[in-house]
Image 1 (cartoon, rainbow, N blue to C red):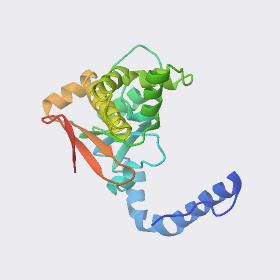
Image 2 (image 1 turned 120 degrees about the vertical axis):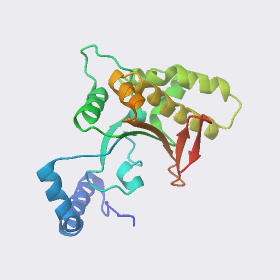
Image 3 (image 1 turned 90 degrees about the vertical axis):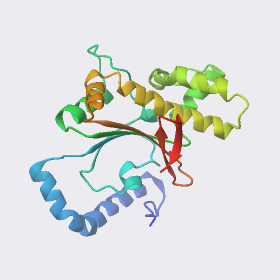
Image 4 (image 1 turned 120 degrees about the horizontal axis):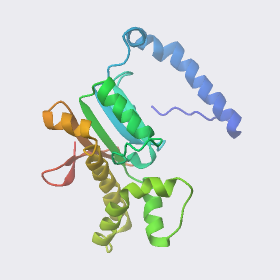
Length: 222
């Protein structure tokens, strides 16, 4: 069911729609989850999986997987990227959340969730073509996937634009999976069998979800 948030004009009407949505949640939905929220408040969170997802408003990990509150620990950033392990004393929000999920929450699965029509990947592709800076922070962040994007561009130069975009977006998922293993405490748990890594790709238009298979080096429908 699609919920229409904005039945008026302007930002004020939209916020009022969100507030109405909250009241609907609290009076209806929350009642069905009351015992779950009480247990979560009392015992704390114990998610089995960490999902690294894009900030994109169209991609909601809990909605896509029909997960309940408390099931998923979610990191959202531009283009669902995992930076390489760099304990240099700088600010590392994604790495800090990874550390908390693995050490404090003892998650058993890490899922990198990429998606179609990714703006971050499109920005990286435009920079390669146009040489544009594209902002203060986005270019540096997206440079994590620079080499992978360049390799895809070289390999798919004659492919349709949609196929090239999909290949780049899926390449970013691979980059994040590789960078996860650069964290020694993640690599140790994966090697020991206590942690599994997954790469997923969500098609916004069709709603289809695919998973990366290392053996075939490709994404297959789930």
